[in-house]
Image (tube, rainbow, N blue to C red):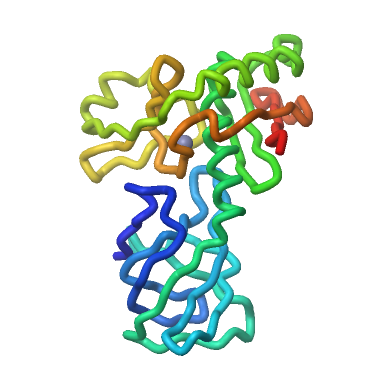
Length: 236
Ligand SMILES: [Zn+2]
């Protein structure tokens, strides 16, 4: 098990950790600030800094096979840390912060376009959601205007937890057809944007939606019967 510090505080960009396993597939640590690829959001990058000052680049972060394990992926040919070694994780914060701003923007987009979400992806340069909707109902200028109007409200985001049973009683909370929230732990994490959105999400978000600053619509595309794709980018 890796303690996932980003779940409680997505703004942590550094932490100390101990090496639990060293494997060509990736390095496992007792704790991490690196988000493993999931829910459409790209895995984090950064570095492991050893006590002597040497730095090992982490090119990606993935979930391991065992539940709750996180793999920090090294570039081929990288030096390996020792089992039990204490080191410091340094997150590529500029990249992650863009992912957080775009991810939170997609929550707002899912309120502006009122239709079931059939897919999604978040990379540092662009994010997208697919909707089960008619192309004729999508208007780029309107989507951009209404999303930016929500961003301008600059409200704080909140994490709330509910039980599996409470979520089962409110199926309307789940907008995403393709990704069901993780069950089995007995409780589900929700992101609340007061008066705007409430939905299950385990990803990383900005503390205040004003941090997104603004978005523009890059494209609207028909990529399938139930997939009308809205792609957005940050304005800066
Ligand atoms: Zn989210």
